[in-house]
Structures are given as C-alpha cells and as structure tokens.
Image 1 (cartoon, helix red, strand yellow):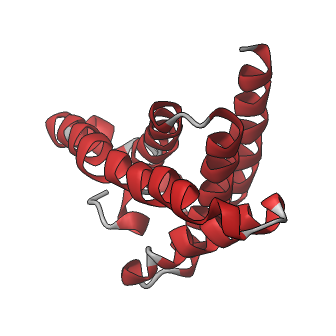
Image 2 (cartoon, rainbow, N blue to C red):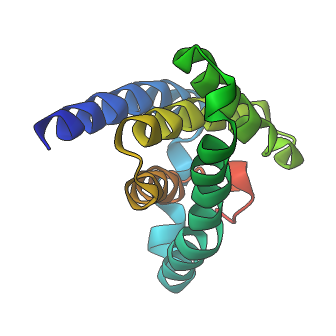
Length: 147
C-alpha cells in the first residue's frame, strides 16, 4: 500500500508541475470555473465521466488489451508504451495536441498500474481522479467537456 501511495504522490507531483507551467501561461482565468459557476453540471460531469468513460476505457485498454496481447510482447516496457500510444490515439477526435500528450502520459501511468496490480478497479479510480482533477482545474474543454 505504501508503494502505491508513493507512486501516486510522484505521479500527481509530475502532473501538477506540467499543469502549473501551462496554467501560468494561459489558464488562470479558468481555474475552478465550472465548480464555481455550474456546480450541478460539474457533479454530473464527474459522475457520467467516471461511469461511462473511465470504466469502459479501463476494460478496453487495460483489462482486455493486457489479457489479449501481453503474451505477444517480451519487453514489458515496450508493451506499456504501445498501450499508452493506443490510448492516446483514441483521443485524436479532440483534435488537440495537449490532449494527446496528457492522454499518453496518463495511458502510460494507467498501463503501468495495471501491469503491477492487475486491478481494473484501481486503474479506473486512478483514471477518474486524474480526469476529474482536469475538470476541477478548468481543463475539461481539452477533452471535450464544457469549462
């Protein structure tokens, strides 16, 4: 449990550093915008996103993908990178380079967590936390939600 907590703290710190730089450049006015102005919409987004987006993605990109293709790859790091790339490419419809970058990083973190724990639930919780955090801090529009 301590290792998982250390990993999450490290991941959150890295994501925070990336976001902080982006935030300082051009997002200050959107920080907590939806939370303050449309709290009901924010709650609905969090619930629907977690149930209808995060969990199915965990099933497809982690559980199914790992069970189906893991034996084809001898190099586990390469396998995780392939998974992260496919996860990122699934977000091409947002037509946003920043979204592709963040989903690649997230995909790598989620694939690594699944590789270590084999827990769809844990990966779903991790994905929901990071995704909901993006909505809270005003970056939901990057992945298709209002801000």
